[in-house]
Length: 410
Image 1 (cartoon, rainbow, N blue to C red):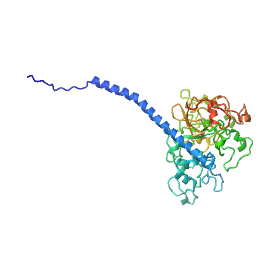
Image 2: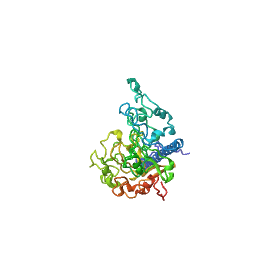
Image 3: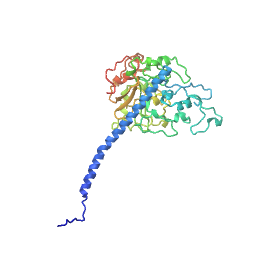
Image 4: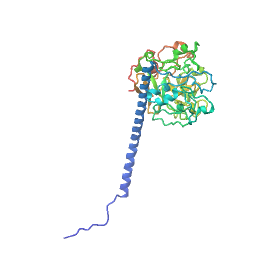
């Protein structure tokens, strides 16, 4: 019988075969990574939408409890009784986000804010030096020694925005209240820091209310009954990117120091965009023009507790992810809704629904100056007119009688 002979050699992959396998794996990984990234962003976007739904539910529960929405730029009046440092009242400047904390399962934080607190951010006793404790409802929202204002509320952050707050910085927000398609004197609503309503015929409380076309009106309450265009047709809140100290137009506003210079068509400032990167200001601009010389805590979205427009308000004038224009960080102007989601932003409607609005939404006539006293076309006659800014502008107005004929977010 013949015996089979076995050679001592074992079969193995050749170098060419290994290279082919490695190349195939590389191709598969290259195809898979974008899908993984897309899946991660889809998850972050869904988480952001869930945050907004919780905020919408909190706003509705607040309205059920108090029969109105929370005031934006509310709080305690400036009294000067203990000096003028802002440590003993908050200059009537708290944002709408402070009031809804108990309805976001932040009762512990609300208890700290709504009662006198004698702790500094480092845990030392404020009263040890003979000072009075912080007042109920806290000091001014830019006080960075008051721990509640430094606390980052998770529900106010979009997971797609990576900008983080340092421990010594005020807490950030990615969500803003909608002030509609007008802005003139809407930073104070015609009411001063002492809570006194002005009777001025141009910018006073009554006269300026004609330009309060959105759901939120600074230093005034809004009820659902005031939203006559219908809750499901009216934007209540929107997203905003937190300023990362870059030249991004959505977060670094263009400054126009004079009110008359603000009274220009919304497309006026397109000339200052970087033609190669239109989401950034042109490198030819000096630092003072796009607000890059501002203190870092003045950036858009960098104070969730501050009710002034640059920090917690947006307008339906420019399309989503466009630029912002303000007279100053505490003054009037308009900011765009913005996000780091691809192609658009989440909007919270008055009925609590969250819809995704694309950057290409109809924004009407961008050559029409926003309605206000200095509008050279209409002036005060612009009050009550339908929004010139298309579907986007109509979404921002609460009682202008506009009909939105297309399905939103589709």
